[in-house]
Image (cartoon, one colour):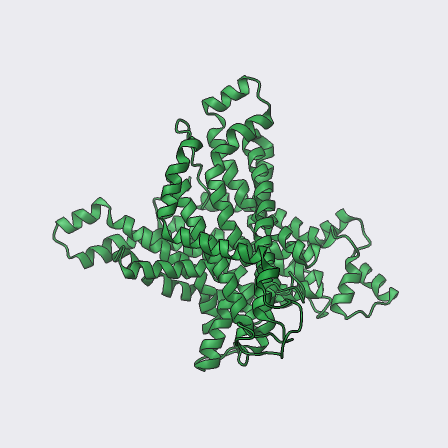
Length: 310
Length: 294
């Protein structure tokens, strides 16, 4: 197990270095002058030659490219991601605060996806080729075809504006996270229910199910204790991968519901041309995505001993 | 989750014979046919937009925020522009985003996969690390990163969405390429003096054509989704372009009083993407009989 984890981490190192380089390239391979763009975007056009020169010096943009790269890398390794132009505060503080919010939202979204997707998939699988099955599969199709921002707006219109059950703008209370979580989880719910269905149908066809039924066990027991347990394994892996993908869905969901978080921070930072903030937020998001996927893989190998991690 | 190589040696598909069978499977699939019809409808709207649209999509043709009526079937937006006319013209933009970005992604990605799979070795290793790095950005984020560096705008959206789909094609094509590289007919083509380029494009690429068509079709749907999401976020089409995502975001502030401004453009995106997905699933069933997704 330890060697397996070691190997997986070793493979990740070049990937993280490449991600890092791509993020660095965003800011430095730009045509045009990033400093002027940033000042125009972030400080509303108050550009004096002194301010430009000062910013260029403070960001080290007057150094050769390789020196900038090494300096950026060195600082990032020590957790220093530079200074946001717009907020005039350290990027790592801004990004860390937002990451907590996004993590909460992703957890809630995952919970919504599992709560909808698994029961739906089980029903569809048990009652294969009935109206229940078609209904569940239709929902899965809706999930992958629905623009997230539109789903969010429809939910706001229906649940918040007309029925007035839940708030449209999520504040600090727990109720506020319900609609965003449902929006974020909807796509994954579709995929999970589709996979749960396929996996359960396949498990029910195995010999051990027939054996258990032949022994005289009740169908209910066989389904839940024998088939379902095995059928859940691939579902859990995919759910894990979906969890990483929620970081991307959060970009839209947070914007629709005006929630603070990494996603909405990246969007704002891009619109403001706040390059240090973009760099930091994108770097943190993709590194956490890679790490989440690593953790899922390791957990998977631990849960299912049949996975060979030699 | 990797795309599996689907053409092991021996069973070499013969396209000429499979087309009728594939067509029959496809035509029996009601969902796929429905998808094709909806999509043709949108394509027709895009082509005949100037004739179909009752008003000028950019013109101020009525009072602001008029609910749907006989005069304005889907109402008017904040500035008094006809929502239906804007939707019809918007079909041009969304379909263009879908097609152009898939063309960019599929050609760049397939070339990358072919080269990596055919030459192997260090080149393969380097290209696949690059693919891994691109896959390390979850979904929308890679497109956002590209937009952050090239700036907002419609053309940049096509580029961004295309670039972010490159790894999918590269992996698919590389997998198939590895699977058939050592097969006899490829070896024979090489021994007979076929150039690398000829072997890659005439003998290897046709093997992946089925899965490649399926992936490209489904990607048109996700390209429309991501493209409209970028415009919704303010990084794609700029006002007053009648782009569906942008129109949805325009109406957001008036959701409670003028629901139609946001609802109809969203419905348009949804219907187009669902049509593409239905069509793609139908094509998968028809062209890719070994597929285990269903």
